[in-house]
Image (cartoon, rainbow, N blue to C red; front, side, top):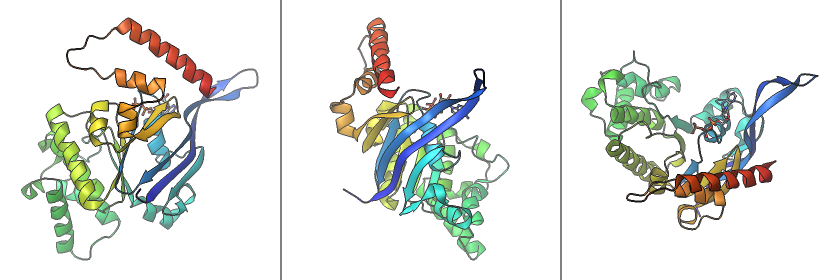
Length: 288
Ligand SMILES: Nc1ncnc2c1ncn2[C@@H]1O[C@H](COP(=O)(O)OP(=O)(O)OP(=O)(O)O)[C@@H](O)[C@H]1O
C-alpha cells in the first residue's frame, strides 16, 4: 500500500443552532461526529451518503474553511489543526479544492490568465513575468484549455471549460491533495465523463491524492479507489471500491447502492421506503 499522506482522527464539527430549556442550554447540530480516515498518496477516496450526512462539513472542517470542534488532521507529520500564520499558509499550498459550481467560484471581472495565475501571484511562485506566463500557459495546456483563451472572461466559457479553469487554478501550485466537492454534478453527462477523465489523467501525471465527494454513485464507481459511506455525521462503512460496490457489509450501504437506478428495472418504492426506515432506525440506535 502507498504512503499515508493524510490522517483524520475523530474529527467533530458541532454547529450551535440555538438554546432551549429553562436554563437556555446550547443546542447543537452534530454535522460531523467522530470521523476518522486515512488518505494514501495517489489514490482517490470517495465520500458518499445522502444529502445532509456531513460530507461537505467533513472536508471544510479538515481544511479549516470552518474551524472543527475537535479532532486531529495529520498532514506530513504535523497536526494541520494546530498550525498558525506562515506554517498554516505553507501547509494550505498543499491542499486545494475544486467546487461544484465553478462559475460562482471564479471572479467574473478577472481574465482566465489572472484567475489561474492568482494562487501563484499570492505565493510569489515566479521571478519574472515570462516565468508567470509560462506557468499559466503550461497549466492551461495540462487541463485542455486553448492558450489563446487566456484573455477571455469566465462568462465566455461553457460549464465544462469553466470547471477546467477551476481545476487549473487548483493544480497550478502542484498540491499533493485536492478535495473535489461534487465537481461534476452541475455538468451534462457527456461533459462529466471528460472532466472525470481529466482528473484521472492529472492524478497519474502529478501523483495527486483526491478526496472526492459525490452523491452520484455511478461517478464514484468510475473514479474511486476507496469509498467511505457517511450517515448523520458518522462513518457507516469504508472499503475498497470493489468491497463497497460488490460486497457491501452494512445495510445502509446496501440501500444506497439499491438507489442507483438500473436501466429497465422497475423500483418498488413502497418496499424501498419501509426498508429505508428500518435501516435508519437501526443506525440511529447505533449512534445514540
Ligand atoms: N453553518 C451551518 N450551521 C448549522 N448547521 C449546518 C451548517 N452547515 C451545515 N449544517 C448542517 O450539517 C449537516 C451536514 O451538512 P453538509 O452540508 O455537510 O452535508 P452534505 O452531506 O455535504 O450534504 P449535501 O450533499 O446536500 O451537500 C446538515 O444537517 C446541515 O444542515
